[in-house]
Image (tube, rainbow, N blue to C red):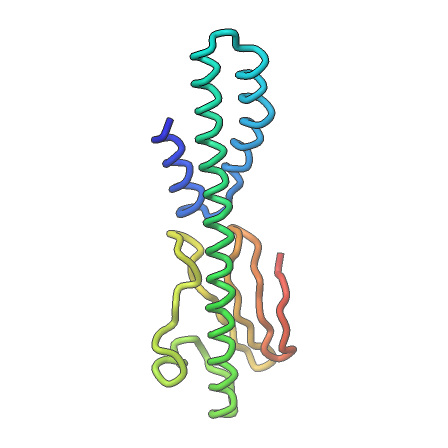
Length: 158
């Protein structure tokens, strides 16, 4: 039981970084497993076992959601730091950097990872003559908040 809950946390928080699998399991536990244990199980030991199992998976689901939320807070804070560095670079050189690597070491020590996951953990920066955009992936494969330097505003791609 703990092994499966741990596997759920590792896979859904650290690898996929989505929370979709956790949400489905949480809904299953709330709508099916808990009512089954409470209303349809006569054996007291079996009832306790089923309720403990449901509680463990609901706790794992909540951990995944909290981890993903925290990671996105970290990514937003780091994005703000990169935005300030890109603006400082633009003020000093009268142009935007071609890539984030140009910011180090004068404006930042190094380009940080967006968040602590195994996938979708990078910042992306696109610089064209007309536009300059920084974004990261908040909920893979979509969910991309971006900052447009020309308009000086945040947006959301999808």
